[in-house]
Image: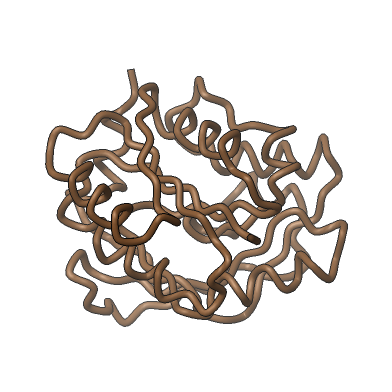
Length: 217
């Protein structure tokens, strides 16, 4: 297989099905999906169990401690060369994994590939906004002002890199920006994006963007 998909989740029953379906629709089919649950009290675990029963590429795991803990745990469980992160209220375009794995295969110095994103409401309806994030010529200093990758759902990373340079589990805000900055500065790895919209990023006040951080503490 090629890609381990790490999906941290917490009380995401309202959104997670569309997220899991977007993984199933990938044109690149060589993947495993590790759903890392921070202790949901809604129907999240039951929904994931239903998908895992029908498709053994899905598996559910429980880890308490926060988003970075869940993501690091997923990286340690990952069995395949690349790790793709996905928040459980975001949606991938079908060609996403294939498109982002290709530059990693071609460039051994590239640690992270990503794309542009379309922003959508919680029900999947487009907000009519597409990101204009920097996708080429990315340098560490760019992460001091803004995150060109936008969100962790937009990242495919080499597993060996993510395992060697884990996320800071003491951080509960901007841990993704700090992680990529540290990866580039201390590891000398390159980061680059594609000028394609391959992610539909959920914008809502009750989804993962708010829920995941309730896992902290």
